Amino acid sequence: MFVKELLPEIPHTTINQYAIRNGCLKVQLKRINHYGICPCCGAVSNKCHSQYIRRVHDLPSGGYRVLIEITVKKFFCAEASCICKVFCDRLGNEIAVYARKSNRMRKQLLALSCCLGGNPASRLSFCFHIPASPSTMLRILKQQPLPVFDTPTVLGVDDWALKKGEEYGTILVDIKQHQVIDLLPDREATTLQHWLEDHPGVKIITRDRASAYADAAKMGAPKAIQMADRWHLLKNIREVLKKILEKQGSVLRQAAYLLSEIEEQELKAENHSVNFSESSSTQVKNEPADKYALLFEEVQQLKAEGLSNRGIARRLSISRNTVNSWVKQKSYFRPHKLVLSATEKRWGYELRQEWDKGNNSAKQLWKHIQDQGFSGSLSAVYRVIKKFPQQKIPLPKPAITNWTNRKVSTLLFSHRDSLNEKEQAYLKVLCSLEPKLEKARQLSIQFRNMFTNKKPEKLEQWIIMAINSGMVELKNFATKLNQDFDAVEAGIKMEWSNGPVEGQVNRLKNIKRQMYGRAGFDLLKKRVVNSTYS
Ligand SMILES: [Zn+2]
Image (cartoon, rainbow, N blue to C red; front, side, top):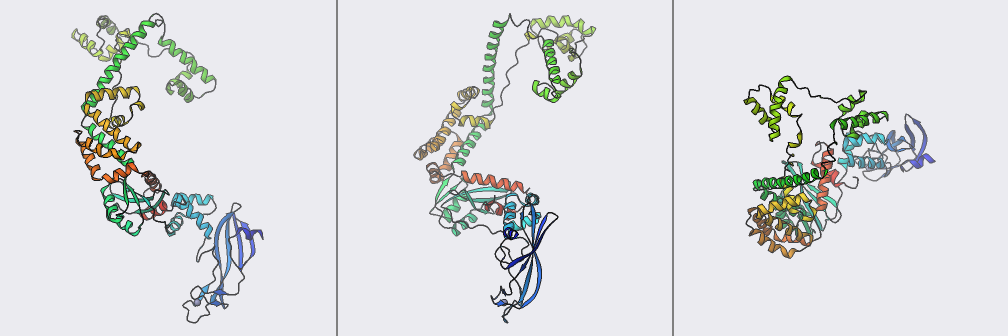
């Protein structure tokens, strides 16, 4: 019968009847076997004790939830010495003992909970007609055993924060398969050491330069090659550059100031040439009233076309308040007409004389007329000088860019060709002011080139140069590299990197945040390691 094909395989059953009610397909089955096998001793028994109805949910069919009701028998055990006096009949491999959900439905719920966690998975399960509560979702996930992996030959190790600044764990990744193998509850050397001792066969260990992992690898897998990760090494040299720049704050500011002066001079020269060439044609141009009147016309036109006020404001890059008021107006009139009081007019002549002499500072002008008996406010002076011809007002200075340590360290670490003109100019000014920075730049670029060109033989020479550079920060960095020389050399030479580990740490963080910090280490581990489902 067709309905039977839709159900999981349950041996020795026939369909009694089925019906659809309230969005649920209910199928009644009956077991037709006359004997049962005792789960304790394996004896076959045909002595029936009683029968009961067992309800099991299954995957949906045609958009209907499916509920299977099976009449199941209980038998007396035939073996007198068996501890099971009475046992229930078993329902095959598709339905587990005591289970209220078929195995295939449980598998889908597991996939959902592994991907999404408790609450979101529960919400989605209702949409998929396999309803389950958030706690069921988490229970299914917790019951799932962790997968067993072969010990990887290339192992990536890194730390991750369960609670930043307080609790940290360790992630272990098979670099070849890009698969998380295990999570350790802390980042202590002994924990990793024990893990490595329990899983012999690791040949290469990629790690950052944390000494705990170096010690653990040395003790737990002494034959394995240790590899310092190149991403971390390059990050470290950037940090060294930042530390060097921290001491050079005044030089950075001085360079920024000099650069802005150069820009200002260039701007002045440019402006002068433009004024000179266009002086005859620009005299009648740019009447402010005309400009706003045109804009007003444009607003009216767009409104007539049916565009919203917000849309007009966005298209013309003007404020919404302006659009709102203009849309209500019939014709354009110029707002903010300047009306001067009699006193302001009296002092206007004096101000204009000073203005023409080249004194364009409102505050200075105010002081000047105050000395002569003016008792008005500074804003009155502003209102008057607003009417004066503005040509004599000096050009605005170009804003001094805030060159932060972080930004400058990126500049120092980049190829000059990849920088824009302004950045190149700044770097030039900066390095001419402080030759040490030029030296640090060259050393950091040489360090990076060792990795890009795979030249481990240059490492020793680089360490000597950095130690003798005269910069404490570079010296300390080089000394530490020297202590971990073999791992760093392997990091330059070998093709492996900690990239997949960083990616998995990112995935872990994502999963952790999805759970709003409510899940503990064990649940997090289940979701991260059971990556088949997520
Ligand atoms: Zn038995």
